Length: 519
Image (cartoon, rainbow, N blue to C red; front, side, top):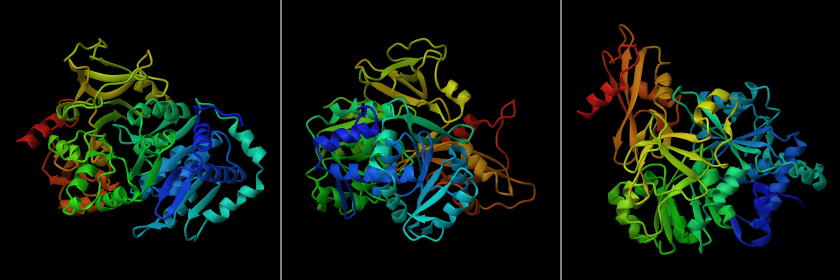
C-alpha cells in the first residue's frame, strides 16, 4: 500500500510491520498489539466510510481517555478526515460552541462517566448542529446508534475502497483540531497537520534513545499533551501507552508498579499530587528510567524528590500551536537548569527571541519567543485574521511568551504577553471566565486575574461588582460558574467589591488589581 511515513497511518503501518507483536495500547483489561491496533483502526475507518465520511470532514468525539479514543483518532486521520476531541469536563454550552464551529459530520460519545449522563447532552448537540449526520454512543444507547453496531458496518466497505481513501492523504493535510481559547474568550480551533504530529514528534525520539517507552496517559483527549505529546509520540517510538480515564495519583503508582512504566511525568500539579501521597513509599517504582514535566514550572523543591526516582530528568516546552514540544533540557541538566529554564530548541525547530520592535534580543534581554517550523499549526480553523495575527510576516509563530537566552544557551521564561495563565497545566483565559460570571443576572461586572498557588501553579481570582440593590454571595457565583465552565477555569477565590478600577479609556485596570492583590 502506498503511504507516506509523515502521515499518521503511514507511521502506524511502519510500526505495525516492524513491531507487530509489541503492545501498543493498554486500557484496563484491554490490550492491543501494534498488529491488532492496525486491524482495529482499519475496521473503524471502513465504518466511517460506510457512514459517508470523506476527506476533510470532521469527526467529533466526547470521551474519556480510553482505547476507542485513539483508534477513532487514527481511523479518522487514515482517510483524510479531521478529528476533534471534546472534553468531558466541559459544560454543554462550551461543547455547543465547539461543535457549531467545527461542524462535524459524525458525533461519537460515551454514555456516562462518574455520575454524569452524557447521552442527553449528545442528543442536544446533534439536534443543534445540522452537519451531524449520525450520533454514535459508546455504551448504553437511548438515542443514536450503538458503537458496536456502527463498527459492524465495516463489512460493507471493501479493503480496496479503504486503500483508495488512505492514498489521498498527504503530510500537509489537517489531521486534528484542538480548541484553545483566545483573549476574547471564544475558543479557536488550532489546525494541526499529519506532518506536524508525525515529523514533529519524530524529531523528539532522541530524548528516548535506547529506551522503548512504556508510559502513562491521563491527559484529557481534547489536550495536545494527550493526543500528540504522549500517544503519537509513543507510537513513533514503538512504545506502549497505558490509558487511564481520569487522573488519580494512587492509580498512577499502581500502574507504574504493575506495568513496569519506564517514563513518567506530567504537568507539575500531577507530579506533586502523586509524590505527596502518604503511602508513596510502599510502591515499587524501580522501573522508572526517565521522568519529566511540562506545561508550567516545577517548584524547585520537587526536583530533588523526582531525582530520587531517577537521575534522568527533563523539562519540555511547547504549545498547541507549535503542535509538539519545541524545547527541552539537555540530558544531565542540573536542578537549577530544570527549575529555571525550558531548555533549548533542537535544530528542527528554529527559535528566535525578539523585542517589541522586532529586533533580535541579545543574551539576557527579554522578548517574545517565536518559532518557525513546518510542524507549526496550519492556522486557526476558519479564522484567517486570527491566523494572520498568530504569525509574523516572515512566517514565525508568535507564542506570546516572554523569555530570554541565557549564557549557557538555555531559555528562561519570565511571563506571558497575553493575560492567559495556566492552572494545573490547563490554559485559563480571564475573559472567558469573566463572560461566564457576567451571565449571572445580579453581576454587573467581573474581572479575573491569576495568583500563585503551591499546587496548581496559578489559580484564578475574580473581582465581582453586583448590580444595583443586589446581594451577591461568592458561593452562589462559584456554583454559577461551575455550571458553565470546566472546573479548572472556575476562580478559586471570588471577591465581591463595590467597584473595579478602570483606566482612562474605560478598560479594567488589571495592573491595579494585581498590585492590590499582591499587598
